[in-house]
Length: 324
Image 1: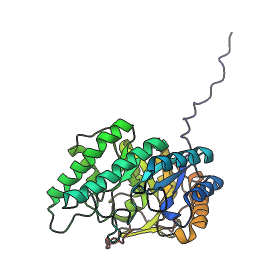
Image 2 (image 1 turned 120 degrees about the horizontal axis):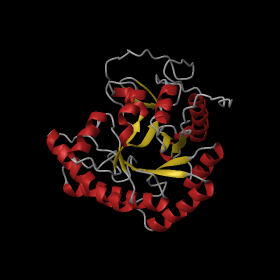
Image 3 (image 1 turned 60 degrees about the vertical axis):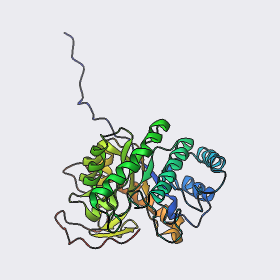
Image 4 (image 1 turned 90 degrees about the horizontal axis):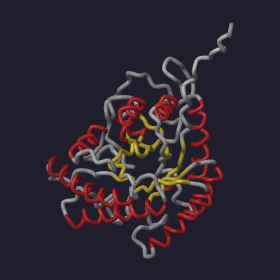
């Protein structure tokens, strides 16, 4: 008689570890080469590269040659990149984040569009996995419908270039902006016919700030369109990017959700007001996230890893969003 071989229950496939990056807008006091070297030494997988006057200035001469040098540096340090376009004063030295795609003046909107087109070209040359963008605030006196029309027009014009370059355009819901939440992203996406190259930048802190669902639920809801993730701590109703442990987010469920949905892009730490302590923040952030990911729980498990305790049904009144 032949004995049946002993069988073991099949183990579920392991989701790959997340790949962490750090945003250069939180390393503004470092030369770009020094910032890249720092992140590589710390063990980061990538960088969120904000095009700004001190880091790959998109308006200065010789952008293609400077981009090629950055590409070589990324290769040398073993880093991948996302290209970010949220520099505060890169287009207007007196008005933060202006002009936007919602500006009443067509020439001003064109300046933002041109920046995004440059970002797409830079991203293609760097082998970046996405280009980040945002809508901007609805200008005073502009009707909502007109704002959405301008946004769709501007994003649509950039998507053609993104399609040609094979680089996703990942728009970020930003508190206080016309496109301020996941519902706003759905409105834009469906209005444009769900183009394949239009994706989402999901900021985990923004989910905590204003979405109805907790951040891990937002990850699952947004999973089909996730092209980039930003991460930091935050409190409910207050748009202030905080170092990990200073807000209310329970991170292990968020990181577990990202792995569960198979997200394989960069998870970029976004601390734009912490450049004064950039190297220290970069080091402590990666240490925190690595520990939180190792403690990421599956449904039914509990963990002590995370930020300050947050009850699941705690929903304080929404407060005025603080600027980034």
